[in-house]
Amino acid sequence: MVKLTFVQPDGASRTVDAEPGVTVMEAAKLNDIPGIEAECGGACACATCHVYVDPEWVDKTGKPEAIEEDMLDFAFDVRKESRLSCQIKVTPDLDGLTVRVPAKQF
Amino acid sequence: MALDEAVAVTGATEIDAVVIGAGPVGLFAVFELGLVDIKTLVIDILDRPGGQCAELYPEKPIYDIPALPTVTGQELTDRLLEQIKPFGAQFVFGERVDELQRGEDGRFHLKTDAGREIVAKVVVIAAGGGSFTPKRPPLEGIEAYEGKSVHYAVRRMEDFRGKDVLIVGGGDSALDWTLNLAPLAKSLTLMHRRDEFRGAPHSVEQMRALVAEGKVSLVIGQVTKLHGETGNLEAVTAKTSDGAEQRLAVNAILPFFGLTMKLGPVAHWGLNLNENLVLVDTEKFETSEKGIFAVGDINWYPGKLKLILSGFHEVALMAQQAHKYVHPEKKLMFQYTTSSSSLQKKLGVK
Image (tube, rainbow over all chains, first blue to last red; front, side, top):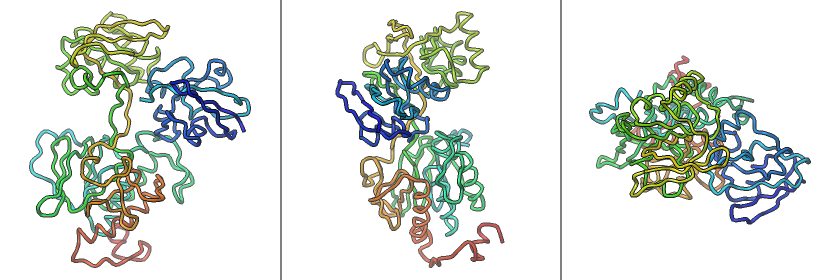
């Protein structure tokens, strides 16, 4: 199991266990993390699972691919460390990953 | 299809059944209703059939359609259209059903946002996640500006003449309206979060040329605040890519951030709802209003799964009950398409 921490806009945080192979979005939904809507169910088609990856983890999570970058155009308050959590696959390398949930998902 | 008729709608269209939503479940409803001799008219707010399958993931494979190990959203839509062809359903695209009322004759009277009127014996709501509506940027107080200074579509280009216009977005809508409104507007600013555009390369080139000529200003950034009293926009604050804040004097904004799904008018038709979903029984998939059915992602019942295949099952059972309303005088005999000559005749295979 891999530990993932979700930090809410008000600073509240929760750490959950995720099975390698699921996406960060799926781990959030399985654990009822507020603020991750995932309207399209993980098809990289809606930008409502937007998160900010903790700057220390950006290298490990990697950069968004072109299709994800395009979809991020539909997110609100996009920053350098913005990702769609449905496009980040949980791997043992990501044990301890911290992501922040934006104030709004649009 | 909608535009040519939007001008003059004369009289109401009469039909057996109206299906609201042309997604996979709405399309298959045409099939099941057709098998029991019910003529349908399908209405969708999008400009083409397929619903979420065509709008959100036309190229994504779907793996859980029985007998189709893998099929994309677009292929599934195309196959369904082929399958329902024999039933000659009427289609209305680009319109949303706003009003639904039962008339004195017991039939349902529907009215679309384009003023089209339809009278039907039964109504099948297959509206999925609801109607696709433009995404509203979650900026504080934006509601007050909507319709006055913030517009999600261009209804009349003249409305933007002489204005300081801000267009936000990086796709075709943002680019097209930048090109079209630049000659009319007093000033036109295009704002996008990055210096890369998803729109057609030709439009991007044209936009870049206008920027080079000084006719359009391009700002790489995002709007963070709206300024102005009583819905009359005076300026926006934008955060540019380097983190700096910039104030832009504009009095009209066109944000283009794609579409989202909202339940929309369905919520006001007096149907019993459960958290934004329409409550139905699991025998007929009928709502709290007799003759109005809800199928697919928009309905709820204990154990509901939002799967296309569940929607297919739902329409088959719905059609049995719909038949009682549309053809009360006829007894319905259960038949198989493999052996029934009358069904095969309807399908045009015999």
